[in-house]
Image (tube, rainbow, N blue to C red; front, side, top):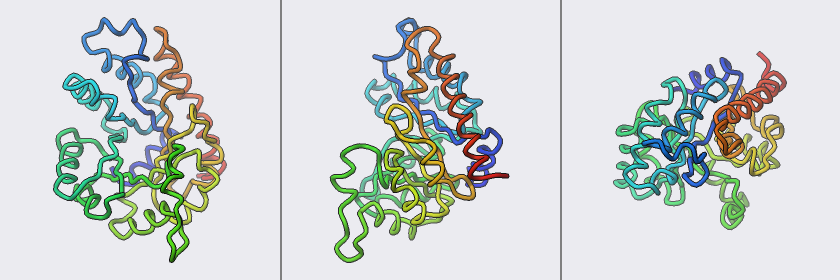
Length: 274
């Protein structure tokens, strides 16, 4: 999917919502445990309830890996079930030496056919560029994340440029490819820095976690992070998929996704009028 195609989907649905599929066996309704594949059945119903309101789904791979072979099967079935016109993100945070990264890329882009994957940049260019060798696929590079530990390294300043590490990551990585293949993870809990980060990467899409249960402000993210092609995929996981723990979980998820889509439509009209 190209940048313009993704923007077209955003315009069609008046939404830049990404729904996280962090499906936890301990949190899904007990009524699903009798199903042959409870994880897939949960995901299937969540997708049916939310697909009209979102433009992307983001399975967190750890939740599937932890279940062993059955988890991988549930993930494959989930990916097959997501409509092809919806952007898919493997939240895997991979990144290793070149040959290993190439095999990670092959696994997620060829074997599983995700549209994108989150990648950790700590090991540098040769750990990231193998993911960029696949046409039509995207790297979503960790830049300034929403977790508390982000302060341990991401804010350390370069002695020469006096830029924090996350800014150096953003600047350096733009030498590796264009905004047609590269996005950045920018946490919603860092909305105070969103305008500054947008100045560093004016044309790139940002994957923005942290709105919802983590307390991120959608309005601030939209005001300071939007560019001419929207440039935002705002992820919400727990507030949507765990809106209810009862049999009405899918309907509750649909209501929460619709509510968020309505807010996004308002911000699109305000900050990016047609």
